[in-house]
Image (cartoon, rainbow, N blue to C red; front, top):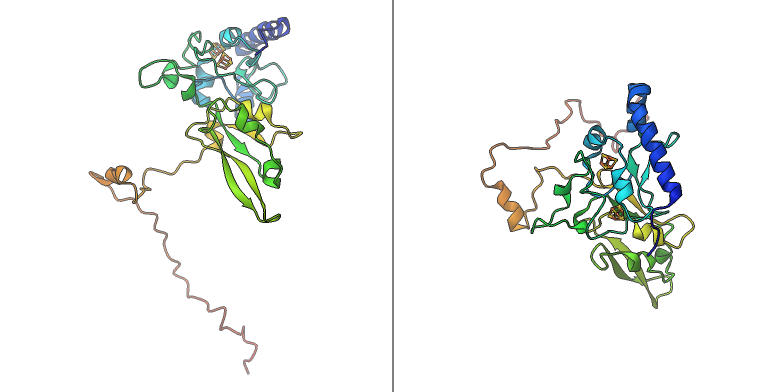
Length: 265
Ligand code: SF4
Ligand code: SF4
């Protein structure tokens, strides 16, 4: 691989740190918060806490950026649509290369990057536990959905056949070919962006969204009745939660049989 930290980035990093620190004193605080709210699509380094908590605890020291052996991490500068001095990355330009020792995380002095979020069952740092984001596929512009053979994203994925699998489907247009379609499994996708970086289309047809943006939330009151493990959650349930909607008290109007008074005398 490539990209040892460059002088340019060191310069930008130190500049942003300076500006970031002075921003705390000099910038109008409300403007800073507005900026934070206006930028929900930022990808943070591995093990970043939930965005609000991250913003409260990141002191914009840039140590994570310095620790990254690639040019992956950047510090926001004036004019970027995010809080100045905070670390982020743009996978289309430089993805996270998923270092096994995750050097960007332990150096964080404030736990804005929280090691506990990337520990495995053996309590070891495990980059595969990272939740930087989730890749989503734009089926309109992914050429595999046109029937053209391409598995660039699949091959680039460090969790090959787990985070991205290829689904075979018959091409009914030709009748004799198969589609090989990339499918992202959000249980495994870490949001590293190697797929977005590798995508061959002019603008990536697979791209990473922050985890909190991409992921829906079912709610604890939905239970998979066909999954005995999930159904066990019903045991000891104390409160009944329903999604009943009040029926309208208005008189029912029979639109189909009502002639609207057309044949009245
Ligand atoms: S895991 Fe490695 S490549 Fe990814 S941001 Fe951290 S130091 Fe950089
Ligand atoms: S090391 Fe931690 S506190 Fe410093 S810039 Fe990175 S995330 Fe923020």
